[in-house]
Length: 137
Picture (cartoon, rainbow, N blue to C red):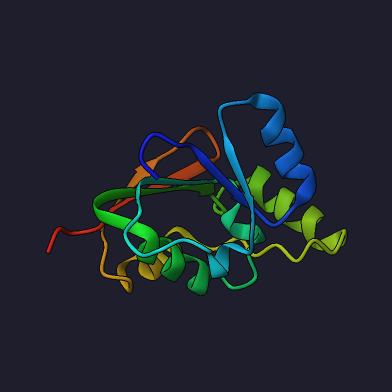
């Protein structure tokens, strides 16, 4: 998918928003079951959304599968250690969103299990950023 910016989401509403921006290739799909061949994306970004996926391990596995050797996977997620994020997590639980905010080490371990080299960076005020690279064999 060289030269294309793909937005994958299960929500048709989110994809409508993506279409309005232009220059994007929206694909409606369950991120745990991506319709792409292996090793196709040079960069993958998951921003403030991992906590919405009920099958986080499967999502990370799929992202690692479609990531090209030498490619980067960046996961930015709310930092559950921060008090405002704990409030957000409680609110999402109360409105039955099914969100699951993982701890940094938990997310990091999911990525490591897929054989990616990983580092953790501080994100913005209330987030963490995990940057993972798929090794070139």
